[in-house]
Image (cartoon, rainbow, N blue to C red; front, side, top):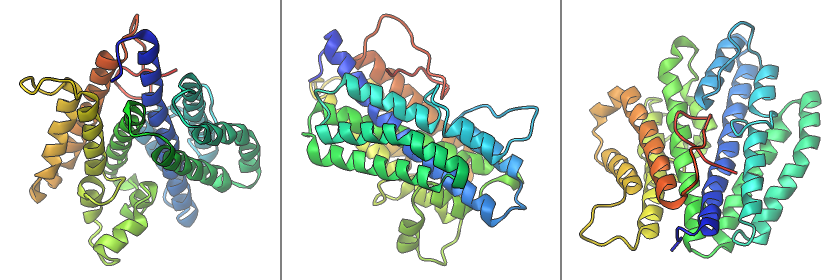
Amino acid sequence: MITTDTMLSRIAESLFWLGRYVERADDTARILDAYLHRLLDDPWSGEDAACRSLHAILGVSAPPERQCDTDSVLARLAFDATGPDSIEGALGAARENALTARDVVSTEMWETLNSTWHQLDEHRRAARRTGPDAYLGLVRRRAALFFGLADSTMSRDDGWRFVILGRSLERVDMTARLLAVRGLAGVHAPDWATLLSASGAEEAFVRSRGAGSDPAEVASFLLLDRGFPRSVLHALSAAEECLADLGGGTPSWQPPEPARLAVGRMRTRLEYLSASELDRLPALLKELQLACGEATRAVAERYFPCDGPIEWSHHAVTREGV
């Protein structure tokens, strides 16, 4: 088990945020790619409104007084290396956390992340000349490779559990944000096909539900499908399993730790969700985001003791990361 020793706790913390930051870079690249393709296919859809909804999904303030366009979106949400709420910022933070935990992550994981970071500059320059497809594609492929290597080259010990726990909580939060903007953006909201594409779920949805499926089933699929690894229910189940294994020393007569309680309540809620409750989707999505924040705080309090609070600016919860 991870102890409260300062160095071991710091490594556990780095692994947790490593999983979150790589997942965030991947999700952000998918969302940007889906939105930008939508604008190309439908230039009359309203560039400013679509770009502002992108900022809303990712929890980043859009420029209030000037036109928001694809160039400004890419500059802020893809190429900005100053904070972890953009692709380059997230990958830079992931690389720093991997360096801290270098003795725990596999050599192949580190080399994948490090080489990706060093290739971003070249792909950024090319994106400004010819478009962002190659840049966003590189991020998506390397994130998939990174997590594939985590599954195939790390022992199923606490180090691996922290990486997967971080990935799972970030995935739940990002999917909830993506679905929430559908209800908040009104006539400028992304269509269901864009949501599926942004979630990497388009082909899986068609194979599972059929090409002629009711678009309203998209929310149900992204939230409740047990077989799709990017669904909220699947991610919550993975997070709960990691927390159960990490807290294996808890006596059976004691209640589960707070992080597992927060995740387990939402997982159970979704397991037994009735169809009528999907009509109240905004409230459910808000609950999901609050549960992710509560679980993150509880994980930090138990496993990552620190000298003082560290602000997490990307979401409205306390966030840690090297």
